[in-house]
Image (cartoon, rainbow over all chains, first blue to last red):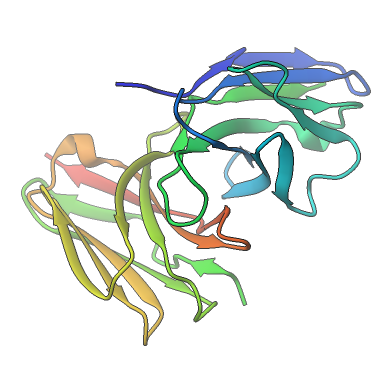
Length: 114
Length: 111
């Protein structure tokens, strides 16, 4: 069964460093998403992406964040200058369409900022 | 007012019993509703979605939607120890691209 994959599973970085989190969405899906979950808190939406552009973003997704689809399979989230409060699980998700279609989540990348 | 609320504390149910979870949402215009299961340290796993008022059954799971009262519920019949997890209610928001999640309800099935 097709699934969303993410790398790395765990990333440790120092405050102020840049990190890139990678995702490979399900192959026939057209909509891609990033969510994050701080330990013990709810899952929060960051950004949605369709047709090579951002379709929606949350207030969390400020200028420090960017997304890119550098090729036909990968979808990346870049954090330019990490802060301690960026420590969280980051989940990539994809769906076959926008609107009322199921979003399938990858296994996540645990980001630890020290 | 929170977009999605799941207020119940941890729910302990004996094996074989029915677990009942509730969720309310604030936007009356919401159309699409999802239940995800999340094991500790893992990602959300989709188990049910519902778009129309009434009940939808899938195996041991039944989702119920009441748009007039703005609540969604999930019933787990014949609960198994493997059902022990946190159950997340999610509502599709924004330009129909953003899932808004509740905090989740932890379910513990006691053998």
